[in-house]
Image 1 (cartoon, helix red, strand yellow):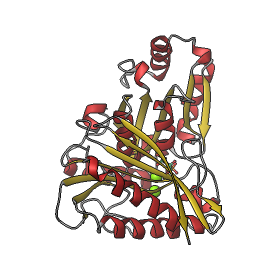
Image 2 (cartoon, rainbow, N blue to C red; image 1 turned 90 degrees about the vertical axis):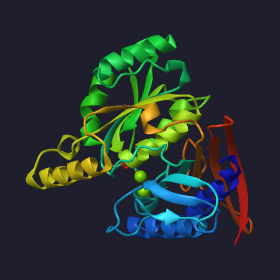
Image 3 (cartoon, rainbow, N blue to C red; image 1 turned 90 degrees about the horizontal axis):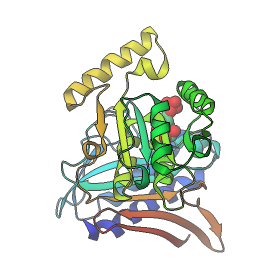
Image 4 (cartoon, helix red, strand yellow; image 1 turned 45 degrees about the vertical axis):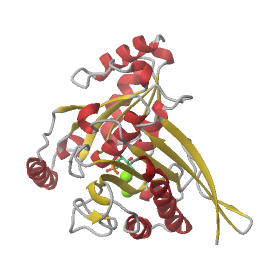
Amino acid sequence: MMSLAWPLFRITEQAALAAWPQTGCGDKNKIDGLAVTAMREALNSIAIRGRIVIGEGEIDQAPMLWIGEEVGTDTGPEVDIAVDPIEGTRMVAMGQSNALAVMAFAPRGSLLHAPDMYMKKLVVNRFAKGAINLALPLADNLRNVAEALGKPLDRLRMVTLDKPRLQSAIAEATRLGVKVFALPDGDVAASVLACMQENPYDLMYTIGGAPEGVISACAVKALGGDMQAELIDFCEAKGDSADHRLIATQERQRCAEMGVEINRIYALDELVGGNKILFSATGVTGGDLVKGIQQVANGVRTQTLLIGGADRTCNIIDSLHSW
Ligand code: VTB
Ligand code: MG
Ligand code: MG
């Protein structure tokens, strides 16, 4: 697995580079398409027997690397791949910060299979490992994490997303004195930041995408943090309506096919088995985790965060690319 670190990092770089020139174009599908094409081409040139196990969308929804797609040159190790070609297509389309091209490799069979649906996620760094329990109310988790970190609630920093479905959680945390950082989008970056050494947040709590959850879990595991997650009914995340109930029914069907359960709490080891994980995220637009792509004389500069679980490495790689 470790020898795949370099090829993996090159793949997220290529995807970010392909999408970046269209920053601000207003069309998120176009951005996704560029990144997907670059990723697929790069993936198919490396010596792996790869399978996309977590991604966005199913086979009938282009553009994407679809769940179940086989990639690589069909030689070498069997690798399961979790991918979000652009985590934050809307952010790139709108010229907003924090968008990443992100991918994780893990040995065959070690990543949770889940459809692209909503997932409740709670992430803490290694100092609060064991202090989280999604079966308890958020307030209890906040108290327990604060206690584990040895700080009062009013110094606890929670990062989340500024979405309607999270307003009650934001209000509750605020009522307890917790400092809440509600980002417009991007809970992968938020999850990783919560686990970093100089972490700007003590915990990450959201209801966001399940693919993003499993991708984040790879980084969380490798960084020694802790995470729990729960797949959520569409109506619970987006409100009850006839249309939403139809989507919810289809999602339940997909869950049954994939052997996962809604409203079951998954521990970190169930999201990602073992620690032979490689995680790579290249910045597209600038954020707190990695810098976005920057124009320099005669080319561009990228920044990538590359994390290895087996050898516990964490590299931030700056690259210069000429046009
Ligand atoms: C979630 C979150 C992502 O988009 O998938 C979110 O996990 C989608 O939220 O990090 P909505 O359906 O409410 O738009 C991101 O924020 C960015 O891809
Ligand atoms: Mg995403
Ligand atoms: Mg995406």
